[in-house]
Length: 202
Image (cartoon, rainbow, N blue to C red):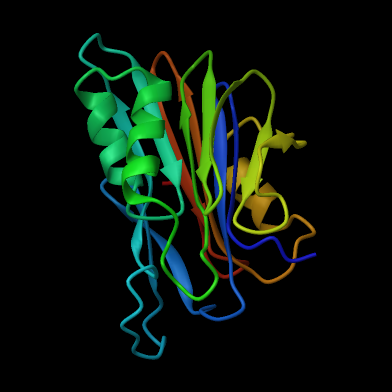
């Protein structure tokens, strides 16, 4: 089954996978602790605005709480910025999703995102027909296709690199690359998996 890009979040851990039929020449790169989806060096030129974006950003709130924002597009940055100025997780997730809306491409692709804290997680999506935001206590997935509402999903990983690899090797079609993140009171750890040739604990 092809479900497109997807996120899985739970308290303390999360992961994001790029799955693509149209633009497979992409990778996750680590930019000083922020994970970014970008074209590979051999990717053909494109003017598609949805190809490159930050997919994981670590956040420290004004109260010193450590969080991570995760998602499939440019909405990850404003989510992180709202968390940094003290917005509650639910509001920080909902407002950018509502403001930026679904992607205006040929498929009306939903935007998907999550906020991960040491003891709680929030997941959300904005589709052409709905904005959904939920606080979750168990691993939960939402995807751009098929699984376009949050639902329970197994996640056995306990480390960021394990989370990235677990979602990259999950039995959904057209895997490209993945990011993983863990959050505890000590901080945020990120990792990436671009396939067998490039697995990095960032």
